[in-house]
Image (cartoon, rainbow, N blue to C red; front, side, top):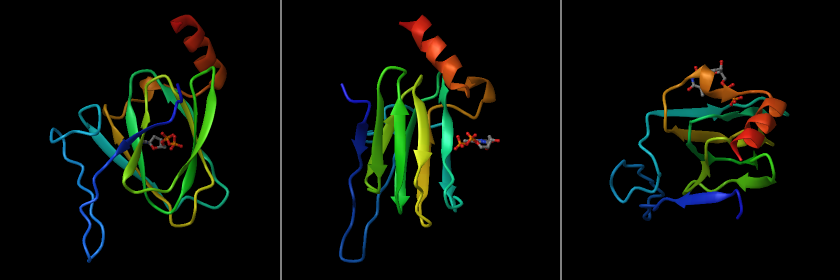
Length: 137
Ligand code: TYD
């Protein structure tokens, strides 16, 4: 099975333009209760971000402007996907290594998170991530 799992949001667009509502509990597309929302923007040219996994946290990332490339890696398979559709969220499960590359100048990436910020939930060393995955399976 591919690591790339999208959740699709309905666009409530009309002749004036587009609108997407992320409403918890109403035909919920996001498969967890959202405890935190953050966004990444004005990323400096050539910068890549991420390079970590989370023990517990689940996230949905939506590129609402511009584009970037997300790499997901579950310790066995590594997949890369272009993010440039504002009505599609990429589900990033727990124990999933992620990297973000090739940010356009106008890229705005909104991330919906299942937990509050907790530095102790981060795995920031790829080798430590591989070891953890090995012990989990
Ligand atoms: P980090 O998760 O390292 O960013 P990325 O993985 O996108 O490169 O976060 C950057 C900094 O911001 C780091 O010092 C932690 C802080 N931070 C918070 O305080 N709250 C948050 O919700 C997030 C995502 C980060």
